[in-house]
Length: 282
Image (tube, rainbow, N blue to C red; front, side, top):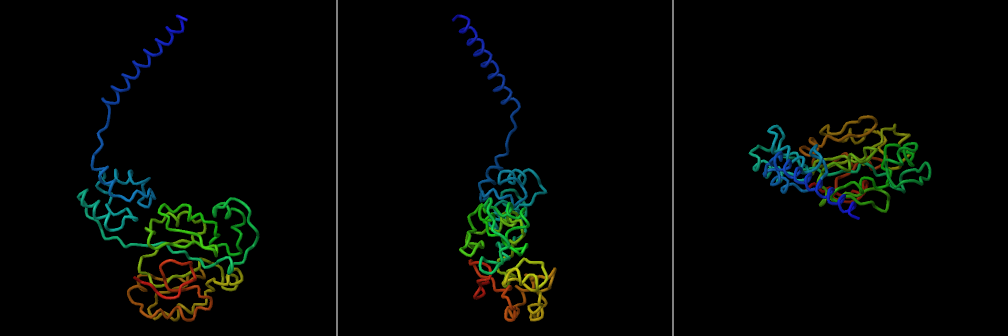
């Protein structure tokens, strides 16, 4: 009994000694944290999205405060108001930011896209894409398993009944996390105010693309020929819109009229790709 008490006493004493040593070392070698770092962090939206290129808001706050070369406008979700606030706090100059929003470049819903096989596995687009490129015949389109929805840090994406993600324009910050999460590269960030979007991501030739999905761009070039401003070009069998030219010069959207598959449409706030009815360029 006495031996046990002695052992406990010795261990307690050793623990106290090491505790005092650690406390002293912590105080002696502690690094002072610039209080401005926490002030800047409080200004940031706390989405921890990593769109700034740093591992979270705290990491960016530390970098922008301590490194003179880190610009104050890297927080994409925060847009201009946050960029200006960070610039004022750090004494830096913030270049004007162009707000952007996620665009789903696929209208291959469950009704329009041809299914190659029945997928029964993890409800994840990355996992599904590992099996023959996914369950759809089109190997470029949305797989509809909601990986982008699960990864959005702001809850700006939902899955529609047709099997396509829908962007909530009020919640979307343009951070780009969903873009990086999509294994097919279906989601793209476009400037707010873009007038026309291509609801397809297929790089296949027209005949092949049409067999795989009735909403596919078939590279017919009619939209390109109809555009009087040269804002549309064909790249890898897919129409590509120059948003800058389209925003600054287009007023009639003639490109939409003759598209046989309606793969190109007006940008609207909300709704699945391919459901556009009228332009909303506000």
